[in-house]
Image (tube, rainbow, N blue to C red; front, side, top):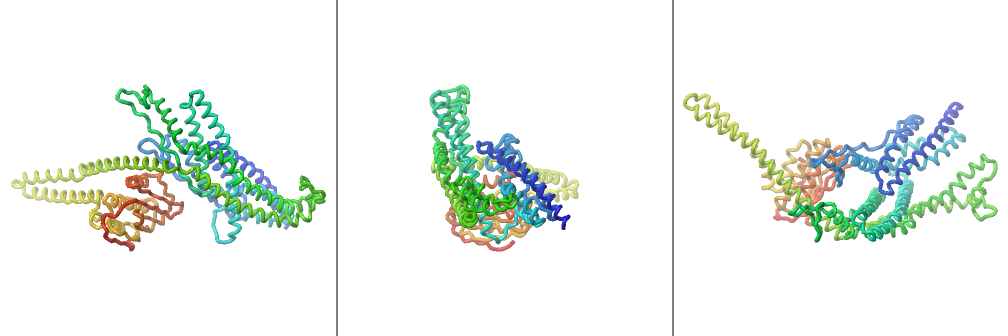
Length: 623
């Protein structure tokens, strides 16, 4: 028993060292968060990622103490996107020329989207308080305190396994985290006030000095990056999605017939002045720019009340009502040999300090007040997010402009895709069927020349010609099927997909019904999109089964493809999903992907369309 106690004391001292180091790591992470408030978000992901080696060391030490390995719960790093044909890297909806900047954004998305990152920060926040208490409890009760600490660390830093127990405790922890995330959003709102002042001063100074076309648009674009960071944090932390409200950026200027560049009634010999003035008009005429400035002003006033005050009230009520009078004061008084609660509350205008009253009524008032503040904080953070969405969401004009631009891009991509498809058909005909038909003609000519002099050789050449004609016919049928399958033209989309499912290399189940036929281009786009998704499920996901569900409602064709593969699909990692998205974009359709690591993968296709013929076609079977 004595040896175990001495070992526990040594581990308690080491635990204090880990607490000090953990506090330094926490400060390092917060220092990396400060540049993110100014728009330098790449330090944010870099800082969070570099906190992980220390936490892995903590897992190893605590796992050695408890005799149970604590596996790191982090998601694997997804592969970097490859360079496209135009020399650019695509990550999500953004294009990058520099691989270095791409790596920064890739690491930021990887780390910030991992739930284990936020559990690490929770541990770093609580550990500086809990570790000294554990060391003190180890002195008093021995190794049992370390076992409790090891259990808590394993639960927090290990692989997360959600359960249905302790719903109130899980709600309280989640509410506490959400309240402090709102607190960070409030601090970010206060940082927005200097940015607002810089915008107002810049607007006045630059217009008075006549330098608006040089400096004003970059300042507005920097403000947009700051607001975009707030949108992203609201999406990741609060779950409120706020789309990009800005009008499309102006296109690059094109020269006139005389080689000069025109802006209204002026001509310039270089495109730089036209580009600067177009960007100025772009930011000045976009209402979202002025709504951003209004949001910065009002947000700096409302955020302290809505999201900064509740977590401070919760922390203060718990600290003054529970932590000091019930936990800290008795332990310190035990070591000091006298009552320390009057000293701790000496700042209050009470003489003498009623120690018994504080220890009795403190928890009765402080604990419910703290829980109520957490509850109110959760509600107010949601209200704050919805209020931000009210000002930062796109207007009807912005939505219309974005849709027009998206449709223009999709039409351009559709035209390019059709041209590429025609080139592919021409190449397949030239290299396949045409070559076999040429060989067929040569064989027939040779047979004609040999039919009188060498009948056996002529018969052999005729056999070769027959084989060449059969091969050419097969290639032509495959080419036609690749352009527009006959079963799709004759039987419709549901029966064509059933035919594909019958030929698939794994079980495919088709469910749902379609009330009739659609326009041939719509059926062709949906057919080839589902074929591509089935191929991805077999080739990349390693799935065992695929479920395809068809439904038509509200003038929209909806198809969902679900597989039980490994998941982790990313449109930026390959051209298949991007090709499907471009194919659907020609019809104002969209692709919605849900593919968490480990699966399952669900891909939903939505195509606005109307029925062309009311023929009923159903499918509900396993192929």
